Length: 65
Image (cartoon, rainbow, N blue to C red):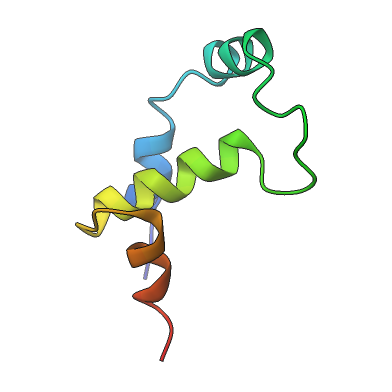
């Protein structure tokens, strides 16, 4: 049984959210975004690296039948 945080949650705790949001706002990263924000894309890329995938597409297709 899990007694603490998962490894993915521990890794994302190291990412400073305020700094990331400031950079996204500076470059208008979420200007035309409806639901898949820069933060969500970054989390997908971190997860892909965690499971040793090269691209976001290959990390998402790893769970499809």
